[in-house]
Image 1 (tube, rainbow, N blue to C red):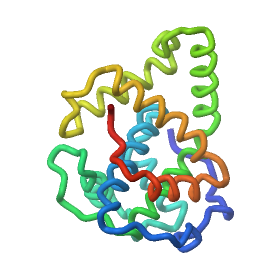
Image 2: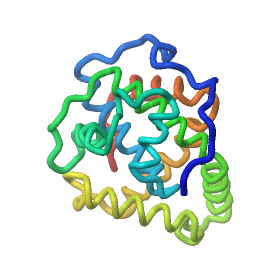
Image 3: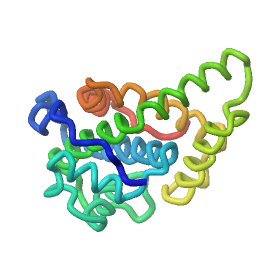
Image 4: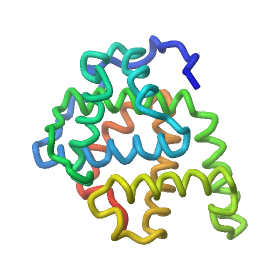
Length: 198
């Protein structure tokens, strides 16, 4: 379904993100985290590459993410991916992906909020997330995509993938807020260990 959301003048430009720069050793971790956050967003909101490219255009970032091939190369730069290593991710591209992710999360904020509220309700009732159709569909889509696309996808348990997917879902709620780009950028820099299933 095409987006009817207009570009927001409040969206920060690339240089408005915190100036703190990742060191070369952090970039692999950042690539992995960004890809996983996009995977969670895709799994929850059924977002495809066209929506990501449209978001890039809305934000004036089409020169960084110009087409399906450039997007695929950026995604394949994640060290978690099967056949990764075809492209290095630079800081400008990482910042662009941060803005795109937060733009899409804001567009789907209602769905994200509903999902997190449902998760909280089920947790309070000591029930499994899969018991709710919305969360069950999300968890299944995330697990299937992770196992299909990631190098070690087949070696992680369902429980591990469920924990990762639910953590990313909660993170998306924060990234959908007006301060989302700053939150995501700082989170990428602060996490010193690779974000992957336990």
